[in-house]
Image (cartoon, rainbow, N blue to C red; front, side, top):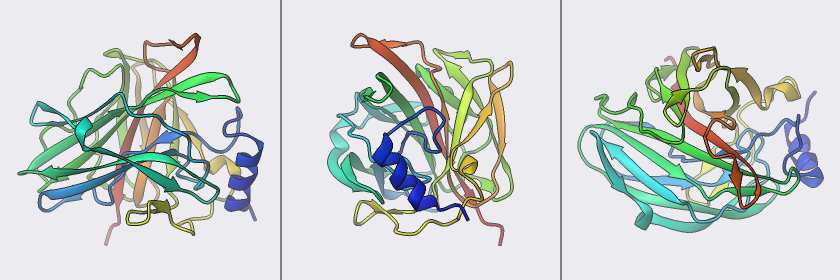
Amino acid sequence: MFNFKQLSAALVLGSSLVAGTAQAHFQLIYTPESLREKGGEVVLKMPFTHPAASGHVMKMGEPQEFFMVRKGKKTDLMDKLEAIEWTSEVDTGPAYEATVKLRGLGDNVFVMTPEPYLEAEEDIYIQQITKNIVNVGSLPTDWNEELGLKAEIVPLTKPYAIYEGGTFTGVVKGNGEPVPFAEIEVEYMNYEPDMENNRFAAEGEITPPAEAFVTMTIFADANGTFTFGIPKAGHWGFAALGVGPDTEYEGKELSQDAVIWVQAHEVK
C-alpha cells in the first residue's frame, strides 16, 4: 500500500519541489473552525508548507500585507503578526500567527500577501496571495465579494457552509479579470494542526490510495470558473497557479498564485 509518510520524507530529501511530485506548496491561514456561533478571539496559524503530507516547511519572510475585510471595511492586521516556528513530520521552519478579536455577526475575510519565496530547485519565486473566511453566527456578509487582489479566487459557494460530499465553486481572477483554463492544485489538510504546539499531528486522517491523490490538479473553464467535489469533512486548499500579473521578482521568474481555504462539515 502507498506509504504517505515515506513519500513525504523522500521528497524533502530529494528537493522541496520537483515538477510532477506529489506535494504542492500551500500558504496557510488556519483556524480550526471557520463557522463560529459567537465572536471573540480567533487564533490564526500561517506556515508555508505541504499540508497533505506534513512535508517541508518553507522559510517564509515577513508578510507584505495582512488584513481583514468585514462588512466592506478593510482593517490592517500587520501589527497582530507574531513570528513562530512550525514543525512538520520532516522539519521545522519559520511561520507566523495572529490573534484577532471578532466583533458581531458576519463574515471576516482574512487575506495575507507573503513575501515571494525563492524555490531554489526551480530557480523561481512563489507568492501565494491567500484568503480564509471566518463566519460568526451564520450571517453572510462578505464571503463572495471580490477584493481586487492581484491573484484571487472569488468563491461562489460559502467556504464555511459546505457539507461533506458537497461541492465548492469559485472563479479564478488575475488583476480583476477571469483567468481562462487556470491550473488549480487541490489538497486536503490531512494532518490536523496542533494549535498549542505549532505543529502538524503525528498521524494523518486518511491514507491516499495512490500518489496522485496527494495533490490533485483541476482546471477552470473558459470563464475561469471551477467546481470541485469534496469527499471528506475538513479543510481543503485551492491554489490557482501563476494567475497574477506579476511574473518577475528580483530578476527571476515569479509564480503569483491565488489560494483559498474552505471547510467541509460532516453530515450527522
